[in-house]
Image (cartoon, rainbow, N blue to C red; front, side):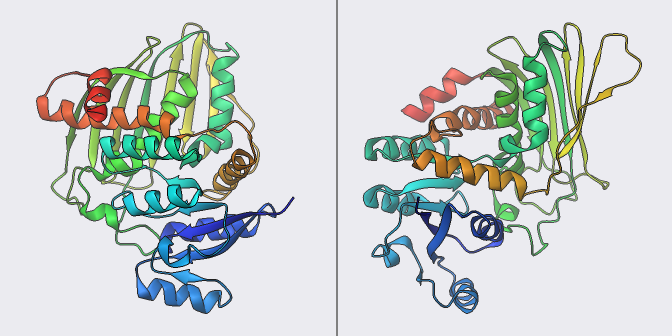
Amino acid sequence: MTPLRLILVGLGARSRVWQRVIADNPDAQIVAACDPDPAARARAAEARPDLPIGAAISDIVGVAADAAVLATPPGGRERQIEACCAAGLAILAEKPLADDVALAARYVAMAETAGIPLIVGLNFRYLAVTQALRELLRSGAIGRPEFGRFLYERWRDGTQGWLNSYPLSMDHPMLWEQSIHHFDLMRFVYGTDAARLQAHTFNPSWSMYRGDANVSALIHFENGMCVTYQGTWQAGHEPMNFDWRTDGTDGIAVQRAMFGDLGWAPRMQAGLTEVPLPPHEPWITDAAALLRMFVATCRGADPECTGRDHLQSLYMLAACILSSERRASVAIPEIAEMAAA
């Protein structure tokens, strides 16, 4: 079977991961690339002189392709989505799909009307630890999960060259760029959608970010699960502190690192039983698995991480913002209605 022909849209920091995992996958190949930044195009042309490179998708529509990978910021994707829909290109877009929930809903409707897959790059679903935690809870080892605590405390220096810099000027950068992963993980692992939440977002005095870098929330899910969430990109100390604990009727499960370290225990057991996990290269192993899923989707397999599913996580994000403004609990159906209006 011939490789899936991909247009890489965006040649910034995140594109480096995609270039590597695509190069390592014999079922996919980059046939063209685009970026509005002349310097980024020049670097790409020097590295790949054989590759058609343009400022936008419209500059390279003559290249035979099957799909596009949008390694771009969420703001300003409208023309990219429109160009893909017009050309019949399947889409794999970095999360979040848009920086506005109503706009994301419009993108989903556009792709569905065009009859093309729209997949969102929620690579953390493909971490071995995520898959193992989900299976652990499904096995009934800790009984029925009823409440949890999700703690993420990180000093993210947005000026480092290997990181995307656009979050520095975003509204609510923690929510849009990091918490969106965590909300998706909760929905994926617990197998349920949020029903309502109450949140407070704010920015510490020392923050390098213009928008709120701290989020605190109490999240109630449709299946009765309740999670206390705290996330920050401007923690006062390193290293990162990641701790996701789930309490069930018969015991607990605890993930103590973002890329691994999973344990569980039945009630009254003194220590945790470690869950063995396969080797993992952060950002690469998970992105490679996500790419394999996308290739399979384009060849007819049932899709995962769809834009339609992603809206449920975006509703949580929007509810956090509205709840913080109101200083009151917000129900998810209200957000869904606002996005559809």
